[in-house]
Image: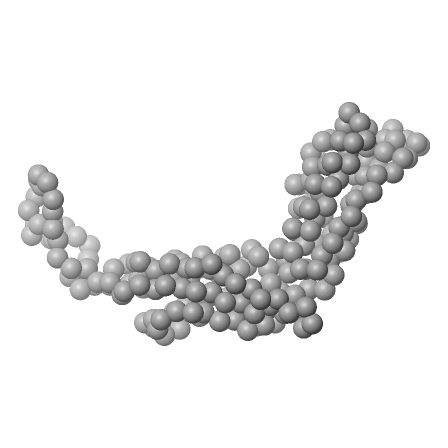
Length: 201
């Protein structure tokens, strides 16, 4: 039986998430031998680093140790010691895209600001908002590309670039049917909830 000890993550609000995903915790404090405990601890080192980087701690490190603790009902203690290091924030935020209508369509939905922490969850949410807003404003073929974040170890900032292919702005045209249609196209047009030349959204 073993006990799990974690340091360095509670201060940045990650200890609960770490324990939810931890291989050591998943083992319920029981392992056949010390080698298995060590393997779980090394796996948790990587987990701790990934979680810290997801919040913008790109210099984060973690190290695990296994100690004999004869007293008590758990003779082994596995410790994962995390060191977040400095927090990286956004530097320049740049979107590579053709002009849109309205002009600030992408910027208004990509809610990332210079000086904020490079939080992976917020980045993904902002990009998802852009991918939803473009089709809703007449760009049904828009594609949000792969972001690039260029880190500067001196200033502890990251310049963010997002390519977006907006595609043509589309409007509804006429109605055409294929195959054996029950209703003619002009009658289908009466039932539609859009008008010809309305924005395709």
